Amino acid sequence: MPTTTIPVLPCVDAESTEHFYTSLGFTTTHRQDRPYLYLALTLDDIDVHFKAASPTLAASDENSGGFLTMVDDVASFHVRFVDGLRRRMGRVPVVGLPRLTRLRPGQTRFCIYDPSGNCIAVINRGEPDVEYGGSTQLSGLARAHDNVRIFRDFKNDDALAARALDTALRRHGGTASRLDLARAVADRAELAVALGDHAQAAASRAALTEMTLTEDEEAQLSSELVALERIEGGMCGQAG
Image (cartoon, rainbow, N blue to C red; front, side):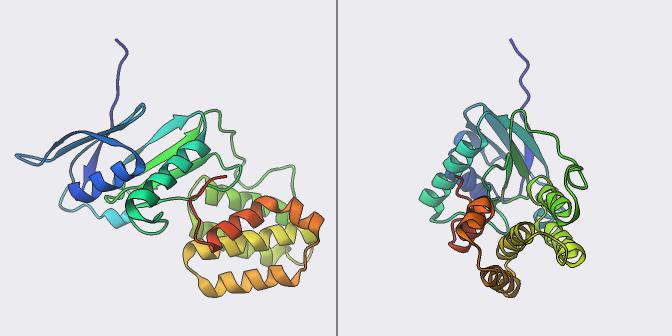
């Protein structure tokens, strides 16, 4: 028989953990609370088990544990999780714990953060390697912006991505092409909404509006504009 490996993660609260994972679509295969906690859940070929967390575990640090799961179609999994969360929880939590990170068009991974601060990264098989520092085929704002994408989509750090994009706009905004500038401003607005920075979101959105994009420019920026409109409309987490 093939070898099977199942991660056993720390759990700070069995009720909230089971509710969150079953909302995603997992099925509980075992639960015991005494004489010690043990919780097992499964979804397709993904199995995850839980034991009681250490009393000193700080879930908010989000360094509790986690694993990677490789799938053939990351977008379909994301839609499945979004639908489940909306049915069971009435919303898609995108900040705090637990949460589901958003999936922008063309993105190849997303993360699930559970109530205990564990992270499951769901990744497309054959995901391309990234060029840290930005693609060498690009220059100026476009290259710096490509590096921001890595921080946002691969490192899953919106705050770092926002700081890096602010730096890129200060350094290269004055010499960037109109299209590159609009792309960066749209993404800055999207990051601001994700971070709950309403003032920055409004300022970036206003700057984008003032550019008065043509239909052709809007078509070329469709990925960025769709991501921005989706998160502004409270639809973060919906793939497509």
